Length: 317
Image 1: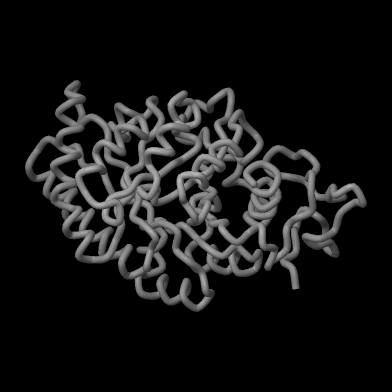
Image 2 (image 1 turned 120 degrees about the vertical axis):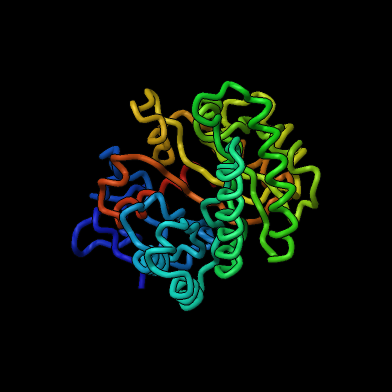
């Protein structure tokens, strides 16, 4: 039986809709616009590669997020270490296995730019723990957000060099654990405080020192949509693409720039050319919807997921 869509009313379900394909009475969140299509039901083949990144429904713990994926027919989930720790690592792995879900990614490791020896050693220890957690969860990859400039520093080349040095320590450990590291380049506006890798080209250059099965890259539409070289870089990435994440880029951006990741179709990104390039590069993995947005987080999680399913079909596929 298909999962009910709360936005459609108490007796409506995902297949309810008008003869022209619209979804009568169903409203997308957070935009409030009428839904353009009915909600795809569980088992719809269009959802075969879809993954719910846990941060999209941030207030749901692991158990609740896994349950939501099962109810809505989403076959994969991207987990976050904070929620996994709250649920417990062993219990989280058990819940995912029992629901028959794939773990598309574990977020996150990284933050490898500390200049002090003690801080750098602590970061490496934390990343080794993250690798162990990813192995226990059978995650498709461990996403690495590499870190920005240390407090008071203007030494960008030095920070990037420390990322390279740290990766040299972590890659053999990850390989031995059977975990794939995934370098995530972030939009340049985050270079100072979150990630000194700003382009896919930089991430590929850094990853090239190790086998693709050990160190890959993340293609995230929010961070990379603006780059005129993106099609060529995706083609170059090929088998190094470890994760493909989608969300929209809102205009204007909110005061908190971290929360500018919008619902698919609410911003300025044309997703289909990016997806086509990723597919052409040979990526056949999950497509993970990862949204950071206060209005999305404030909405009912089931309504968020229903909107996500509809927009995935209309905007990404």
